Image (cartoon, rainbow, N blue to C red):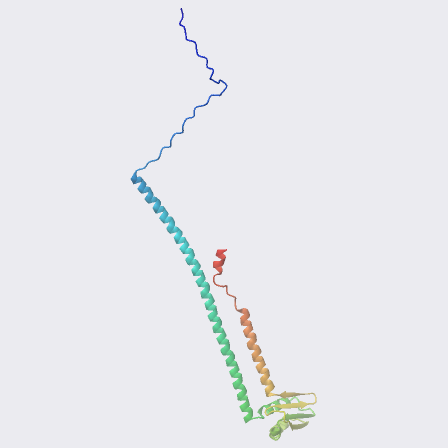
Length: 237
């Protein structure tokens, strides 16, 4: 007679249509690395040393850039100051030269006035003698001078007329509007005039024109300077 098994109970509460739920394993806790106190201190010292060296290198680089910028600005300022000094010196030299030229012209004019006062006919006689050579065959010559110089001039030019062999007629006339030292020599085809005041005015105009042209020429050739701080603005851009 075989072994009898007890009948299983009916499992009416079990739902065989539901899938099996897999078992989820809990993740393993990571191991916390551990080091000794000595190793920790050594690593901390190394990190501090590296950070210090990096900071010092960054500070040196920033300081070098700042010094280079200040040096550049100082060079621009020095160049600007030097050019300003040279410009001021040139201006003073120009003013002194202008004053010297003006003084020389003033002295020459006054010296000429004194010489004319002492020898009012010297220039007239020299001019007459120079003209008489090529004009010795002219039919007539007219010399106009200041009234008080008519007779003295006649006495001085008569020997010259004989020396040059002038064959025409010489007339010396006095005119009040002609200053002493001036004269006007006329012949049939033309004439020549000596007017000291007009000559002085012409010389003065020429001197002023020369000084003005030289001043404008120096202003045009003077190089333009770059303003200080230009490199700073370029770097900022």
